[in-house]
Image (cartoon, rainbow, N blue to C red; front, top):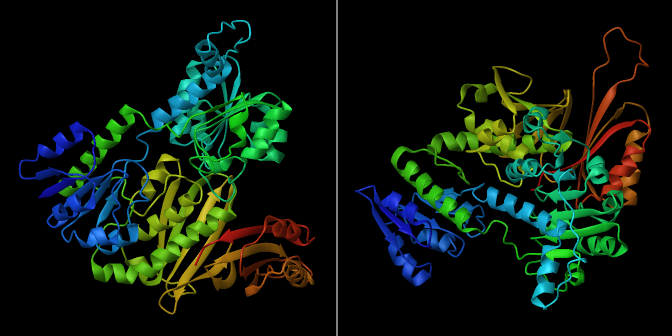
Length: 534
């Protein structure tokens, strides 16, 4: 077996692979003219970020079984091409969590004690002891937006500094927060109470520019903002203006909307500390990810153990062909409910009906979780690691099987969150088309693709017209309009109120103002935008 190490990784990792006496480990350069000749008979390829593992490179490696990426990013790997060729792709998420957490704390301390300014003053030959009076972190309130792997590591270190710790993360169960002794609060309360606000949330449609002028005004006067997550979380001009006004005391940023930044408004402000996206770049982090990827590749090649897979491992072709459309359906149902529900998911229930009830549905279950988790996490879930990620976040997974339902072959997913339940059932039509069959136990059929405006309302006259008017005023074209209503209880009066469901598929993007206007319809009880892609 031949292992090609195309970029510099941990020496201990390479030595681990060399311990396999029947393996040949070849260290080469990432340059294509050096690398491609070595791939003709390679079983495994270990890389970092320099090698572009595209379709052409994969074509040059007909025996390749696995690509190991030392690090989290896989932008340099053509995942679809690898999957088509049956090549497993692994990465090492979380290897730099401690490094990023330490950098976060370092930036907080540097701001509190004016370390960069004092250092610059000393280098200029000055002795301005009275100017640089610091502030202790002890007793201050640290607000964390996001309580994932890095957020948890920050909590551990902040606890030693005697900080009071708040967190906002709607997808973290209360039990996890309780174990960490962290007070979970609303986003507005996080803003109003935090002396230091540190961002550790993934970039989503909801979190893009979440630190904007409106939310900055909600923050406690004198707050200091730290960002070692994603630059796009912050409206940089709005933050600069808040600092100039004195409402925000300072900021420390390691990430930026554009990297390297150009004409950054924050760069001219002395209250701002900037570092060039180095939070995760430590010798220890690189050593950890290098050793881990070598270990993962070894375990996969020797025992078939799959850890941190980015794509789907190969399965028998016949089984895959039968299940493949339902994997897409399952993922879309999970994504649908992730955008419908509010708060942390406590339990996910999946029911299979028809021929699916007779099949091994592990992949379908994981596809549901993939759709659910990928809407709320920066760390991408896939059908291999979705269960582990869900369980780590305290989400219970339950599966049931029904031989017969109204529909021949269907998947029903129910998401229980904050004492409430949302459900969606779907099937496949015409071989490949995923369709919604029911939402919250009310029959309503529509395509599970594109942009859907999902509404619940009391079944009274005039609602449909008002929905159409609002969308029409905004120049939105309706591609599909689906209606359904609940059953009136037997024996009840004809004028008893009945809840109805409306799912509108529209062309183009839906601005937030549309949902706000729909919520103003008197009979409307619920409005959500669900984005499912093509």
